[in-house]
Length: 334
Image 1 (cartoon, rainbow, N blue to C red):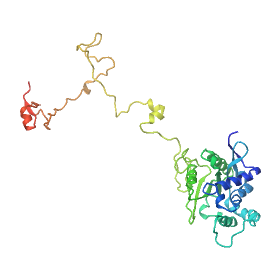
Image 2 (spheres, one colour; image 1 turned 180 degrees about the vertical axis):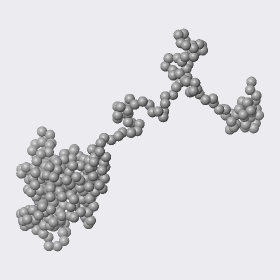
Image 3 (cartoon, rainbow, N blue to C red; image 1 turned 135 degrees about the vertical axis):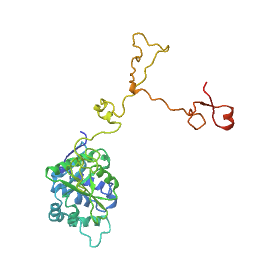
Image 4 (tube, one colour; image 1 turned 90 degrees about the vertical axis):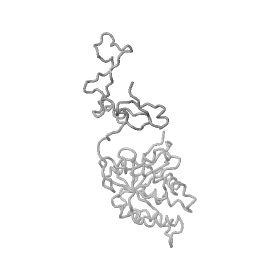
């Protein structure tokens, strides 16, 4: 069976922990950077799967093993309350709060664990849901992240949630490019530190697909700017319109550029072929009306003179005098 997205199961507990640890350090393995990396799934994965399993989806490698996930909450405020009252008592003893300022990654994670109220950010009040999405490196850049996100956004939309946000380390530029492609936009948050907050609507189109420019669907106002994309199909203009629109190939030529008529041709002997009226044009030639007769040409320039010749009825011609003076000599015609 090929890789596919499915709902999370209780048997995926260890796989969720492995995915989180192996992607927690700017998308890379975090084990070299923590003494107790097990705090990472406790903080960022298992609590979501325990509280809201209906919003937890995994990427199955086709053999029953989870190799990626997306999980989150539909209500950040409620999640913070439950984390404080139900989740923290289960893990506070194993990961105690440090006495002083955090000096390493383990201490920082312990501080985050003991302060779930940090999730309540006033600037994010219009984005009540938040999510986490991670994929093992071997399964990235194959479209699985987009499939996971669609499943999660669909579940949020079914619950009436209109917008979702996430927090990411600003230095993780590959992750930022990934979220940009999925239609997320940056949300200004004062004093965000090393984090960047991104958000999007649960019903918006992905960037680079339907509704470009900020990831909004047609006719849907952008949450930050309020602008809308025009509804309806794009109108194609320019020289390639006929290639894209079959009807354009059948359109008549523009009135501003009429077809050019060609003069009739005679045979090499100067006679009109038999069976054709005198003065008629050969087959395939367009007749020229008297009103469309070509206008007489103006006087021709003399070579080398730089002046318009023919004012006195003489043609310019180079001769010995012209060779001496550098100017064209004029002689009477004939």
